[in-house]
Image (tube, rainbow, N blue to C red; front, top):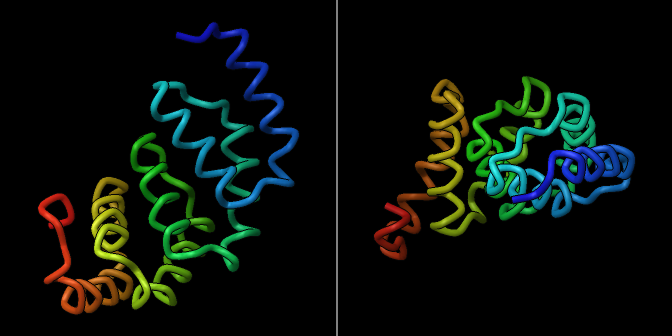
Length: 140
């Protein structure tokens, strides 16, 4: 679809501006990469991960669910430090998550092989109990 030269140029520019990205920018970059089947260079993934670690404290429940989903779609583990920060923030926000956000977070943790994130899974399980009647066929 896009030439490798264009993707390389976009990847280089994204790496340069990564220190200024918001959570939404990071999520959009990861989702676009996954949708195109493009594997960004390790240096870009590192820059995105570093910035994501910095903005995690400001992330909303939607941001947490979306970034976990983006990494799962890419089939790429976010790394121990970022994952720990995301899991910690998700535990704080679990009670605010919508049914879709809970479902996407649980699904993404499974895809990423993070079933051992017991405290978060328990917190999300409690949220499922609270919102189960609102869950759609897709969410269950």
